[in-house]
Amino acid sequence: MDLNFKEFGTGFPIIILHGLLGSLDNWQTIAKRLAELPAAHFKAYIIDQRNHGKSPHSDEFSYDLLAGDILDFFEQHNISNAHIIGHSMGGKAAMKFALEHGNRVEKLIVVDISPSVAEDHHTYIFEALKSANVANVSRREDVEAVLKQKLGDDKTTIQFLMKGLQRDGAEKNLEWKFNLEALWNHYEEIRDGITAAKPFTGPTLFIKGSKSDYINAGNYPEIAELFPNNEIVEIAGAGHWVQAEKPDEFLGAAMSFLLE
Image 1 (cartoon, rainbow, N blue to C red):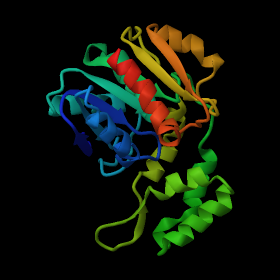
Image 2 (cartoon, rainbow, N blue to C red):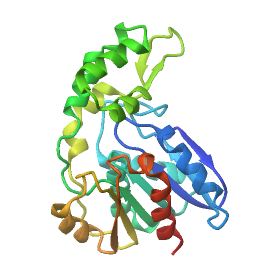
Image 3 (cartoon, rainbow, N blue to C red):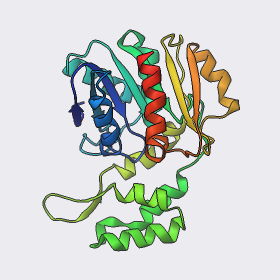
Image 4 (cartoon, rainbow, N blue to C red):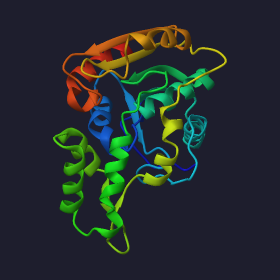
């Protein structure tokens, strides 16, 4: 799997993985700030995961496959070990990789997701995306109007989804950057929990938004079992997109952990 990526800075590598329906662009500002920190000397890689952005689209999806894609990326770029940051679906991919290839992960940061089976937060979003029927629509405004009709006043989600809309290179037709059909077909696997034969014992930071329930007290036993060397930091006033809603607080927590 030849994943699309961007890189910033020089130094110890940090691999950053976006969430469901996202792309590497969601993390570009954070990656640049990490690379520019004078005390850190990091080389930040932001990656489009399979079925997202400019990376190859596939009918297949599983966290085993995503972890294998990450391993391919390590090998292709001669990375022996790295820090990994993953948000939501990307956090589960990062956890799976750390559990399977613990010797390749120096420190792990998981953003607003747990290893547990996730609640259904996206069926209504997929239904809205399918209703937009972008292949037969010529104007972005028409797509946004459908999303507003289906999703109501959820401006944050609508803005996030609209970033995933583009025109194809040849016909200039509208299309999603993500593989909507494949992701919907595998949504149960995306929600699924992460399991492993043995824990990842390296330093692990879970960062949650105070207004999000993706990480909650019911998840703590699984977190402790799979990631015994963990700490959990809550960012006040943030929802699920912690790094976008509270970037300074997110970076403060991440850098304190990475540099300690």
